[in-house]
Length: 121
Image (cartoon, rainbow, N blue to C red; front, top):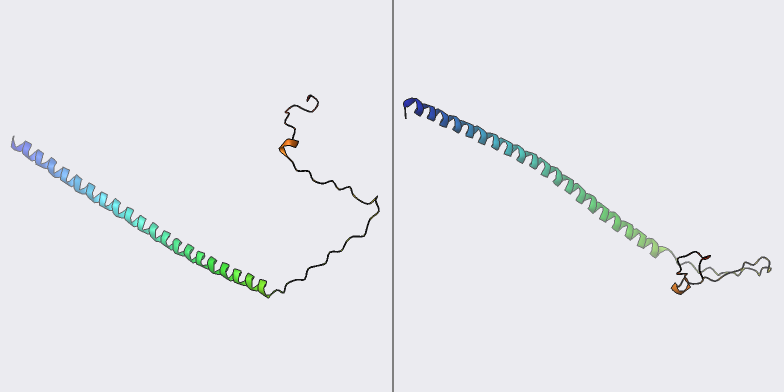
């Protein structure tokens, strides 16, 4: 190997080391930027979680207060006496409505023939 080849080989080795250092530095910078972004996102999510937990606690307190208020209203209200039901005066037969009792809808009562009634034999 000649001196010129040795110098060229040394120059390439130094250039490769510099590229590797630059690449490693860029990788560290990207990694740090990603960590910073994730830290900001975690802080926002933790703050939102604290806010939601405070809302949930407030909701529990309001529900408990509402339930206590509802139970105190029920206890304080005196019982109402039953209202006597009055019978309606008898009506003339012409004014009376024909009352048809409801017939349960049993399977045996249903028409299982899929054809219209005109074609059913």
